[in-house]
Length: 354
Image (tube, rainbow, N blue to C red; front, side, top):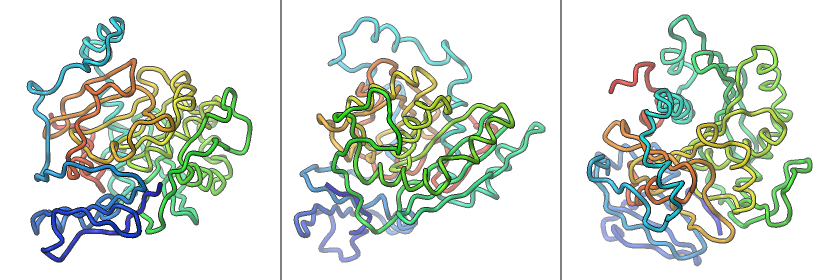
């Protein structure tokens, strides 16, 4: 199966609201308003998903399909584990009142990767006597882009992976994870989507195995974190697996990431990063995390976190089961993919505003 950005928006009115089948690959075209089309064209890569299997999105496009907190599903009826049910019933702010800010700042960096982060992010992070420094930028021949930042306000050095925006199709065929060295416990069934693995390895090699980021962590004593949105989130998960197994990375974050790891790989990652140290975030009813269905080859990873509401001001953590439906949204909204505490291409603000 492959993901690519070809297909785009349909301009001819007779093509609206129908699936197109081209060379056995399903292309999805959506009918939206002129104003929304102008907005979404800036983020075209996420508007057409080409997959070599049948998966239909229930496109019901609104400006934003935000979810009202009082009316949202409170639990997953398929989960009967009393320990998990009890743990997830405790509001996040009673466990750690700073948890939302921890997630929010990682979302800011991920969304900023689509825009002018060098000029936008200092106004957010270079406050209260802190600095914000871009230590390194990378762009590989396979199309993986991102940057490494020193963010004292977060007390971290962060590797940020931008979402994939190339016209080249991205293979999702499962292959054994190979990061250039043995990975303890990662056997033949420890797999990831080929294209995502290739993207990560291209970035790893382009940065000399993250040598500059590692040096910054050693020199400053700051914690080490990874983050990314969309396909960039899937790549960030592999970065966490690599750098976490080496004892480097302390926090593993991703947002809107489609399933890209096998259960065996996800289990290894889950043992490395438990609770708040490893969180995968979905906003409202974002469609993108749902484009790869759950299977024996692909599953979600880490602690599931759902942020919802008009400003994604509400939050719920599902600590024991990454596939907990109470933290996934229903996958019906394209616009929800573009707002994770801040719009895509922006870097938020130090004061969250709610």
